[in-house]
Image (cartoon, rainbow, N blue to C red; front, top):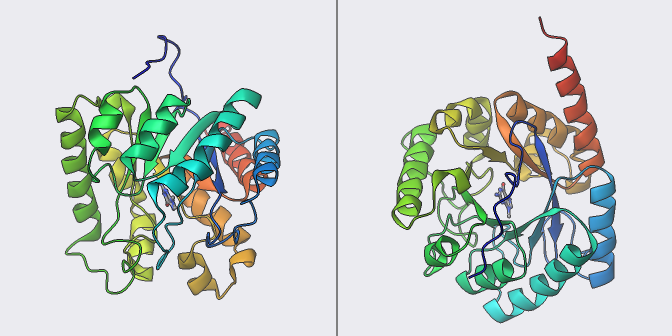
Length: 278
Ligand code: 9MG
C-alpha cells in the first residue's frame, strides 16, 4: 500500500474543522439523493470548499435508520470516480464514509485522507486495510445496526458505555499498529440512541476529551433536532448550528455538516469571542 511522503500533519486540530457532507446515495436522509448525479456532486464540493469546508466526507451507502445495504461493487462505483475527480481538481482533505474493507482499500489507493467508519473498523478486514496505510480514521460509536438501531436502544450509563467502547477500539487499533495519532473519536449522535441519550451525550460531550483524541460531532439536521423542535429536515438549520456550537464549546475538533457556510460563520463568531476572553 502506498504511503504519503513525510509532511505536515494533515489536519490542524487546534482549529475547528468543518467537514462538509456529500451523500451520493439515492436515499440519504436529509438531502434526498440530490447529489447522486456526478456533475452536481462535483459542483456541490466546489461550493462547500468555497464556503470554507476543510474536509469533504463522501458517502456511498446511507446509514439512516432502516437503510438498505449496498454491495461493495456498487459502493466503489459510486465513491471512487468522485474521489478521483475531487483529488484531481481541488486541494482538499477527503474523508470516505464506509464500513467495507474493499471500499477502504480502493479509497486509500486513490488518495483518501480519512476513513470515516460508523462501525469503527469492526467489519472483517478493515483494521488490516487501515493498518497498511497512513490515513486517519474516525471511530464512531453505534449500538446495533442501521436497519434496527433505533428500535430499543439501551445503556447502563451512556457516557461510560461509549468511553469503554472507545477504549476497546483504540486498543484493537494499536494492536494492529494503527497509532493513536491517527485516530478521531465520535460518539455517533442518532446511531442506536434515544432522544434522551442524544441530549445526554451533547450535554456531556466534554467527557470524551479524557481520551486525549480529536473528537468529531455529527448533529447536522438529525432527528434529535427535528423531534425536539418539531421541524422537518429542511427546517433544522438553527438547531444544527446550536448543537454544533455546543459541541465545539466542549472540545469538538471536527463538525460534520450539510450547511457549510452557516456553520463556518457560527464557528467564526465563537472563535472571535474566544479571542476577547480575559
Ligand atoms: C456517516 N455519518 C452519518 N452520521 C454521522 C456521524 O454523526 N458521525 C460520523 N462520523 N459519520 C456519520
